Length: 216
Image 1 (spheres, rainbow, N blue to C red):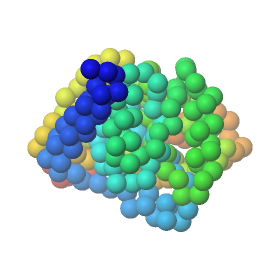
Image 2: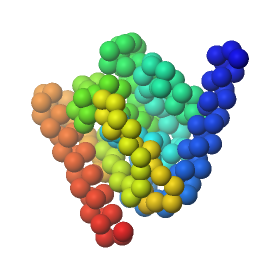
Image 3: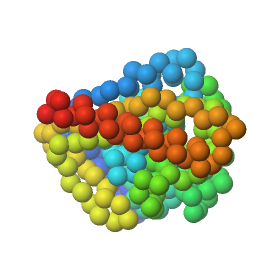
């Protein structure tokens, strides 16, 4: 079997598995309407979630017109093919390989009014929950809004590599919080911007956990 046919089969299998798993969960979503409103107003948006939680957000945004940043390793190739099948557009590259090409692709996309870019700022190789500088520079340069996004799930599997990567189990509850937009002043230095970004991600996570505690 040639590589193209094998990838075709893998792509369709993974797409089916993800749709089956996530469709059996009950989603509790907060803040997604604000993302849609920004899109309607032709404001460019960066949706940012930590690498460990990307699959829940990936599934939840499958009906959006999204550009996503993905690395160039084999695992990223497979998820990229699934994203393309779901109608997304891909920007390929990582902080270590083809980083400048990927960064230029992000800037070009964000300068298109109303664009949505999905990024895992600590991916693809970590360290976990430490943002790479690219997302900050891109938001600062283009004045796109960063939407810090968090996930909490009641049932999930964890797969350990440099991070614990989560795949939600069927028949659970998934809580996603699309947090308040972060706009980065061009005058701020990197340390100030990084602290602002981390604070936004933490606030989204705290709100999500609070909402989950009330609804479980």
